[in-house]
Image 1: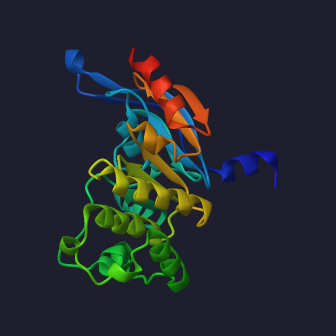
Image 2 (image 1 turned 180 degrees about the vertical axis):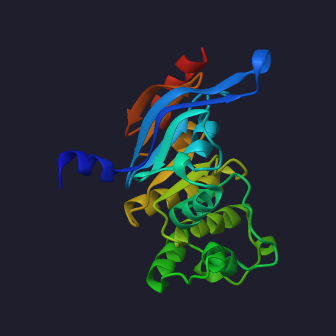
Length: 249
């Protein structure tokens, strides 16, 4: 395998000269101003920046939930801009997991049924060994028969996280996943996401405004005005907070 091929296979998702504008004329807003960034396999990456910096727009475009004005985004070697709606839907279903601030659980299904839902829709069954690993890692083995209304907010979000992982996606995108949780539940969720990377080999890209959440990541990418302005390996909450202060000054 050549070095260039090696580099490609190490990258789970990437953006190349990504531009996203909303509106027209005087009302036009440029959310992304030509971002090029890689997200490596088996790594937990956080995206941070001031309000309006383009964090969620970047996440949604790379995840195929929104389209770019120009530039390209790839999941693996697949250029999302070349896919029609059906192919894009299949790619999101088969290769991507999502964890949102809202839990998005089906209230009439129990935890186990909610976890298996994406695979059920695809007409597939979870790999039993992987399913048990994910459920064990999320710490809900004794709550699988409970419906969402019988679970705490933190437990519901961990069900949502397990649902994102059970199909063994190539990459998981998380948008402010602890935003609706208290500090203890948030820490439990982030701890699970960290273990999913360390123990299960998962790739996670997370948007957050919280330096404590970012400290769980391997790397933080900082945005400002729709551009990448810095990155930080092995972040701590103190270093992240200090860097954010300079961006918001």
